[in-house]
Image 1 (cartoon, one colour):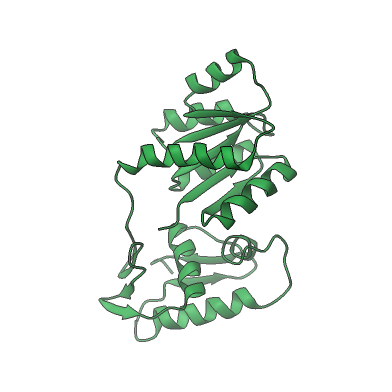
Image 2 (cartoon, rainbow, N blue to C red):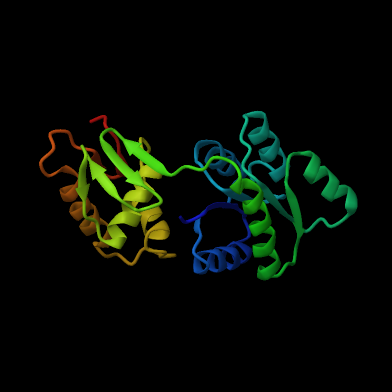
Length: 227
């Protein structure tokens, strides 16, 4: 099962360096560059670990961590910072961070620290099934069923559905899908998203009375039981 990582980093070069490495290693990665977006994403989504830059626009990293911990979010957090003094590290850990890595850093060290945090979390209960109405996705076997009927999805269709399920009841934009499902860093101006959404919708809804995959014109898509 793919591990999900949230990267909150406003430096484009650093973010691209991290995202490229993690995706090549099989992680599912989401990225935001603003502190407020980091707090929102960290609070509303289920991640296995977060990578948090300390100096961010909108809200600094330590304030985000304090806010997450106050809200009961226990996701392990690796702090990234150019501040390397011992006092700075202590402040980061006391704010609720689980580890502290100073810039510049090598990818191998970043990965090793993430693996440690993931091992610590491994003993806790992990999500193995996602549900939206009578639609079920088994994350361990990748079996997808609706109303007890097994649905046959192609690998890209499954990845698309998994992303939509993780964001159910929320609007998912075309850009988000291009980045997270196809790993495009730019919009290639193709109909690939629309085509796959159409195919997925047909498989999810043929033979069923209630639609689940909705298109919001000009906004994106939403997986929901609600019309």
